[in-house]
Image (cartoon, rainbow, N blue to C red; front, side):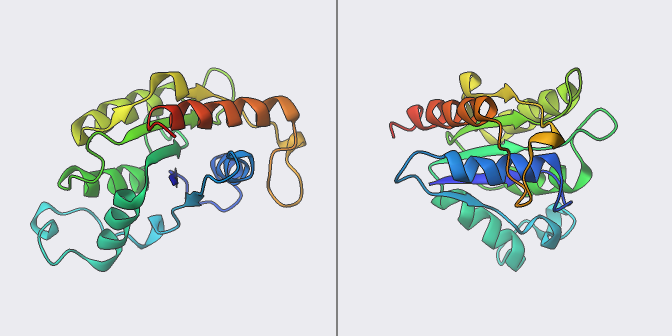
Length: 175
């Protein structure tokens, strides 16, 4: 199972569009599950990173533990990760669930944008011990003209590149 993590809280964001599309283009037999609890996570406080964890944090960590790999798509705000997504990642540093887990990201931003978020993501995932699959980290800008009414990318080339990205990520888990 691939856990799809969006760094955006906006339902219609390019990041959500990319992850909805990822679910559609995942190889047959591969479950691609979108994590939807970003808005429910409490602000990270190291004093609260003890048992019992807040219920939303327990849910996040359980979803990560169940996954074979992580595929992330996040916007860039002010040159870095959005605060809400950095908060999600902060909750994972104290756990062991991401350790050695194959992880990659798709940058959906316009050309020339998104580099700051990708660099920060690489740094933070390094602290969690994630196994970053470089060949599955790609930049696939979303052209709104190629998004259908269901919020899915229709362009065959983008869909093929996204499917290839997922296959590369799966190769890292032997699946």
